[in-house]
Image (cartoon, rainbow over all chains, first blue to last red; front, side, top):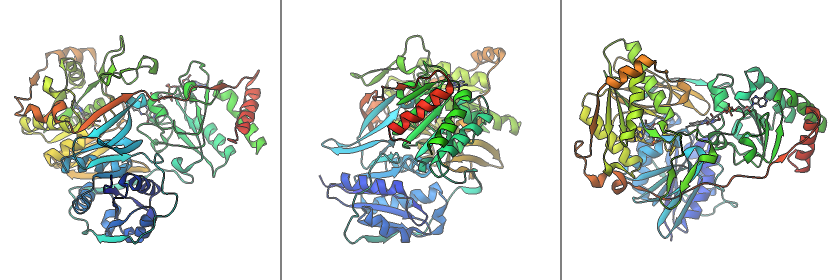
Length: 324
Length: 268
Ligand SMILES: Cc1cc2nc3c(=O)[nH]c(=O)nc-3n(C[C@H](O)[C@H](O)[C@H](O)COP(=O)(O)OP(=O)(O)OC[C@H]3O[C@@H](n4cnc5c(N)ncnc54)[C@H](O)[C@@H]3O)c2cc1C
Ligand SMILES: Nc1ncnc2c1ncn2[C@@H]1O[C@H](COP(=O)(O)O)[C@@H](O)[C@H]1O
């Protein structure tokens, strides 16, 4: 059944963010011949429209106002609401990002509808939309249907495929009003120190946990990442390690941290709590290094090493370097 | 000032996966034997944030802790009272059961409305059972108060709330006029641990109870009847399973064997 879908886009470096392209791919499939539109907000929004059309949009609601570059809920919700009013979509998709987390519930309450958060699958069938999402710390998954319209879902990055071939057809641009009032003001911003490769972009992630015993353990983890290649591997951490102040919270992997899907994930001195696995279970190959052979992490790992990390990491680093 | 802390009682999220069971007929989690329900982690942090503000304000700020749940949720309320909150409010009604974020926010907002003089609402970033993360923002929308999510620090001065928010790549400080809603994350730090004396004092603090009728809510707008998100299926996803244990006489041998295995699997 053809139906119209609206994607709340995010613009990064002048182009639709990769997750926005994934959502447009998903929207195209869900639309089943219907219309796909996207909102693009911020100073660079207009310039991102063509790429959004190629990624699957038929129409772009563009709010080319630099005020949108900082996410202010009051301003973004007004723009999203204006786009919904014009597009009257059957479903609204956005990323489970800092923006989507904030915007989706607000939009649901404004529109007297419902949102499902952090979905890994969104389908459409006889009974309308169905969204599936992890819950209970990753121990379970729940599938929901929507009693109201539009169905709103935030979708996890990398859970959807972008279009394989560029979408053809003339895209239409509709201008949205400039940003309105905001009750909030941003008084300051601190960038976390994370130069170089970002966790989500790394093809290899090596994460350390509470079993490292202290911040020094992370120096060994950094050496491991360097041996794998500074352009390939990034260092992550469990929440226990971040809560202890051993590593920056920006590097936390898990349910309330980052979701990573690298080719190789090496978990060192991490017990494998469901809330941690919720952030890395999509990795292609998981290696667990833990001195407790009963540790839960071995249940989700492809390769396991029962050892004290202090003993095994130095020769592992050497062996990786030797293998080149 | 008058602060509200929203606190939910949930099955212990640290239940070992082997003890985690679902009844696929009723789509419910089967309570694990011998593992008591707990106050949702982030709600303890929300209480901690409210108490810190109260302490720095050094005035007669009152903190009311509200929970929508069954009689057993008294335990979650008492825990926040023992931390230092002043009064409890249990919202209990069979009609509230089987609801979603929308109905929960509706019920909590009605209670906040009823209290009348609330300046700030502190919620957890997400309830650690359904991990949804909507109710705080729902209250913010229904009350038409500004709301800020995922706080690692909350300050209040001159009728304004200043919230340090955790972002993907750092932190941001947002200022909003009060009344306002904030949702609190673990980066705030550990909630205080009540002393025995405080636990005994908490037993004497008032906990009021209200039903849908007390809140002026129609039964059709709450619980399963009012829910907009319908749970169709709850299931345990499959996990990997077959782990190859890398053997070796020494850590050096294990290291060599792991690299060999990863090369063979074409991961390295
Ligand atoms: C709602 C909620 C959300 C959460 N979100 C997250 C999240 O996003 N990310 C996250 O990571 N956690 C999260 N958690 C916490 C999670 O439940 C666990 O508490 C946490 O992941 C444990 O971290 P850990 O594995 O580092 O520590 P521990 O569980 O303490 O495990 C340490 C491990 O190290 C091993 N070890 C000790 N010494 C050595 C050594 N010398 N060599 C080798 N191994 C050793 C031990 O055998 C043990 O298995 C969340 C919890 C809740 C309730
Ligand atoms: N039944 C409830 N009673 C009181 N507070 C709740 C309830 N459900 C949710 N909350 C509050 O809303 C927050 C977010 O919940 P949720 O949106 O369900 O993830 C929780 O951390 C609580 O502060």
